[in-house]
Image (cartoon, helix red, strand yellow):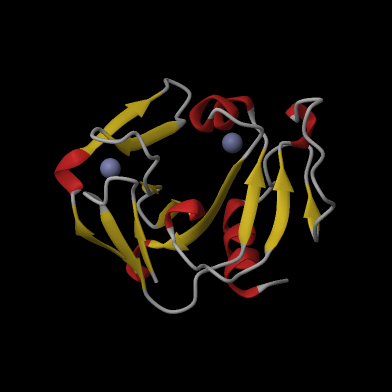
Length: 141
Ligand SMILES: [Zn+2]
Ligand SMILES: [Zn+2]
């Protein structure tokens, strides 16, 4: 499926089925999106490619490792390749995506003004094992 930022300068494609969605309630994601949580998924780098606009990506990285990549023209968050083999994808960029949300993470920092639904997996902090979490999003438990 194809995703685009608001101004459509940046476009990307995920081949095969798009993995399930998770919501992250960490304080970094709250500031990045200006809301209670980020809705994202994680795919593998070999299933992801940029179609256009890579030169319009602005990158910000916190010393702790958190990365926020966004379109410098319109401000939409854009995918972010990490640990060289994973790609975090903000799923709101994919129009018509028809997949389910299966996990909430960082519920310990959920704001009082948000009431998330209980999903298949509900973690107070980050998932214990990143690779297992990515497999869960991609294929289920
Ligand atoms: Zn844009
Ligand atoms: Zn987060």
